[in-house]
Amino acid sequence: MDNKENKESYDELVYKANPFADTAMMKLEAYAYFYGLNPQKATKARVLELGTSFGGNLIAQAINFEDNYYVGVDLSHEQIKKGNEIIKKLGLKNIELHQKDILTIDESFGKFDYIISHGVFSWVPNVVKDKMIEICNKNLNENGIAYLSYNTYPGWKEASKVRDMMLYVNKFYPNLSLVEKTERGRQVVEIFKEQIELYSDLKERSKGYLEWMESVLKHQNYYLGHEYLDMFNDPLYIHEFAELADKNGLKYFSDTNLKLSMATSYKKETVEKLQQLSGGDNIIKEQCIDFILDTKFRKSLMCKKSQADKLNFSESIPNTIIDTLYYVIKNKIEIAELEDKVLEETLKHLLNQKNGEFEMEDAKEFLNDKKLSKEEEEKIIQEIRGFILNNVIIGNLNFYLTRIERTSFVENETYVPEKFIKYVEVILSEDGQYIGIGNFKNEIFPVDTIELILLQHLKEPTTKDKLISELDKLGLKRMVDGKEEDVKSADYLEEFFKKYENLNFFRKK
Image 1 (cartoon, rainbow, N blue to C red):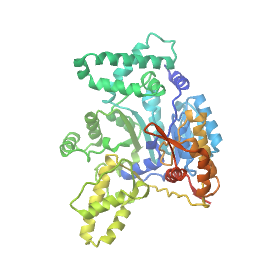
Image 2 (spheres, one colour):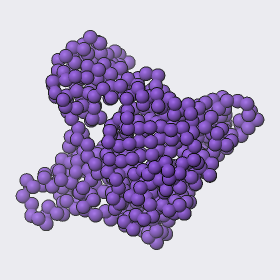
Image 3 (cartoon, rainbow, N blue to C red):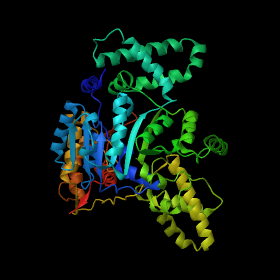
Image 4 (cartoon, rainbow, N blue to C red):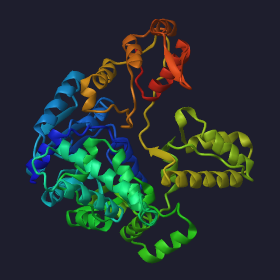
C-alpha cells in the first residue's frame, strides 16, 4: 500500500477528527516554559497541523482564539473538502485547510510557532516520517515547539501480535473493503480470545494477551481498522525517536505525560536505579521508564537545537516557574490529616478555588492572615510547591501559563456569541460525525439539544426567569433507578450556567 492507498483507507472508513487537549497551544506553551524555554504566547501564534483530517482539532482552537492563525494539511481531498465546508458554516476567518501531500511541503509554505501532528507519525511510510521531522525543523520558528504522537515499544509488542492476527486472517481476502476486513478481524479476535479462555493454564499464562484482546474489542471500527489493518503501523522506542529528531536539527525534551519523562514521583529505590542506569542522560532515563511501565504510546515535544541549552532536565523546577504557572484540578486530590494544620488548611483552600483553578499567589494570600514568622511561612510555601510539582507529574493537576479570564452569567448583561451557537449546531447536525466539539483548552465535551435551545435564547442578554420559562415548556425528565423523574428547570439552568461559564461561552455586551 502506498501513501495514496493509505489516504483512500481513511476516506472509506472515516476517522472522526476530535480535539486533543495535549495539542492545545496553551498546554504546549506551558510545557515549554516548565522546561525553561521561551515559547511564543499561546494566544498570538501561528499553528500548523500535519494530517488534520476534517480539521476538528484545529477548529476547536480557532473558534476560541481569534488572534491565532491555524493551517491544516491532509492528503484526503474528501476530508479537507468537508472540513472547509464546516469552517464556512462557522464563519471562521483564522483557519485554512489544504489538501496537500506532506512530501511537497517546503520552507516556502511558511514558518510556524507550533507544529502539531496527532495520530499520524506511526501510520505513514518512513519517507513521510522523515519529512514530518524535517518540517518540524525547517518550518518552525526559532523558539517554536513541535508535537508528534506515535505508538511506542515495548508496550506495543503485545499489540503487534493482535495486529498480526487481524492482518493474517484477512490476507486471503484482498477484495474485501476495509470495513469488511475490520469486522472480520474483530470476529476472529473474539474467537481466539474465547478459545484461550477455555484452558485454565493457557488463560493464566496469557493474561496480558487477553487483556489486550479485550481492549481491542472495545474500540469502534474506525479506530480498529486504521490501527490494526492499515499497512503502516510502525512503533519505535523513545531513544530511536530522539535520535531521529537529533539528526534533523531538533531536540526532544519531554512527553506530555510527565510520568514518562520525570522520575521524581516514583519510589526512592526506583529513582536511585534510574539515576544509576541513566548517568544523568534524560533519553536513557526515559527509555528505562518505558521498559518499567511497558509504555505503548507517546506524545513527544521538541524544540530547535539552538534552544537546547535553555532546557532544564534536572527535575528541580525553579520557584519562579512554579509560582508563575496556574493549576487546574484534573483528578480528585484528597488531603490527609497533616501534623502541620496550617499547611493542611492551605492545601484544602487551594483545592476549593473557583473552577478548580489556583496559583501560588492564592496560597500566599491565605497565609498572610495566619500571623506566621517569615521562616514558618516560607517552609509551608516550599511544602506547597513540592505538593504541586508532585501532582503535576503524576497527572492530578494540569498547568498553564496563559490565563483565560472567564465571564459568569449576569442577567441582562451577558450573551453567547453567534460563533459558539453555530459550533453546537454543527456538532448536533450530521457534521457532528466528522468533528468533535472542544473548549478553549481543547478538551472534548458533550452537548445536547436542550443546551442548544438555551444557547439560542442567549444570543442577546436575557433573564433567568425567561430561560426557566422556556425550559418549563419542555417538561424536563431524567431516569433515576430505572424510573422517570421530573427535573426542576431552575436546577437544570444552574448546571447549564456552571458548565458554559467554565467553557467560556459567555461575553459581556
